[in-house]
Image 1 (cartoon, rainbow, N blue to C red):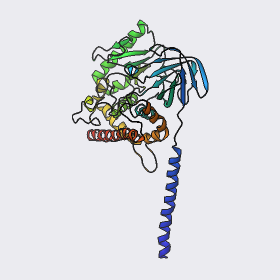
Image 2 (cartoon, one colour):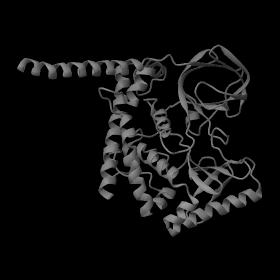
Image 3 (tube, rainbow, N blue to C red):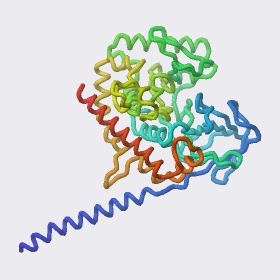
Image 4 (cartoon, rainbow, N blue to C red):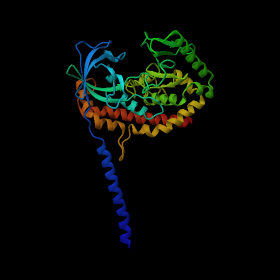
Amino acid sequence: MKKIKLIIPLFIILIISIITTLFITKQDKTIKPIKVPSIYINTKEEINDNYINSTITINNKQYNNTKIKLRGHITKYEDKHPYTIKFNKKIKLFNLTESKKYVLLANTFDNSLMRNKLVYDFANKTSIKYTVKSMYVDLYINNEYIGNYLLCDKIKVANNKVNIDKNNDYLLEYDISNNNLDKTSITTKINKWRFIIRSPKNITKNKLSKLDKLLNNIEKVLQRNNYKEISKYIDINSFIDTYIIEEYFKDVDCNLSSLYMYFKDSILYAGPIWDFDQSMGLTLDSEYNTKSGNSTEGLYCDKNIFRKLLNNKEFKNRVIKRYNELKKEIKKLYTDNNHTKSEITKNYIMYKDSLIRNNCKWKKDIACKKEDYKQRLAYVRKWLKNRNEWLLKEYNEKS
């Protein structure tokens, strides 16, 4: 009887071990290297700031009457340029949102090539109503291999993107940098917040006047610091999730530009999320102005409009509560265990051939070796872990 009693637990342990092994094996088998799609673009002119004619071939299908141009403010002057491509009608490329225009991000400054994708994929798990879809491609121009690019939706007003009324609502970009000075904008009276008007194009004087009143009213509401009043004019959930994304990933530009918002039925929403190639400790630690000199520490994006919101105790408490709700998804970005792989590891397994090939072409501070590339990913992984731990301690100490 004693032998039987001993055998039964051992048998159970064996069964559990077999099931676990099979589960892990199954999990691992679902993540396989992927052959990244190629995009071939042919032009007769040099690509510049204005659209030029092109022919685009994807999956052996040729698209004529297409156009291409440079994009970006700083990155377009780098050796590896970002581009905008335009088709003569709406088409659906891969799993992206159907559109005429798409963006090819070069991720020039990001030696991991993952920062933008990690953020866009994470944003899709939040309450932000429209978030950019993206995927890796290999780009060829006039039969020359250019590198690995992140093919993305272009942010615009459409039923399947920023779903607002083109005639009565507004898509804005918060931008207090020295970029886009030629764009139509409104600067608020109290805090001098500058908003570039992305939609409608060619805005009329009446609509400009209406928008001016809406923005200055928002500013006055934030000055009065009454939560119930704030929630009547601002979509609280989208601002909370947008702030958390900006703060956690520590986007260098979060206080300057590339911060999108929109008015829908006179309520201000935050989003879509955009432009995180210089985040997650990519810049010098000194630029973050932290007392310790460690970029994973300190609050950084609690400036301007977010500072006004965070001055409200109810809003700040909701940020802390929401961060704790999202911490499981945050840990999935960098944590590997026996059952699941982190988002960083998944991206490496699936796309490493294309990512490393890109680094072989564009040698800057990274050699053409897997081991060197893995070191860059290890830095991102460690940074995300340490950043999460710091924020959890900061928020939970003040909750």
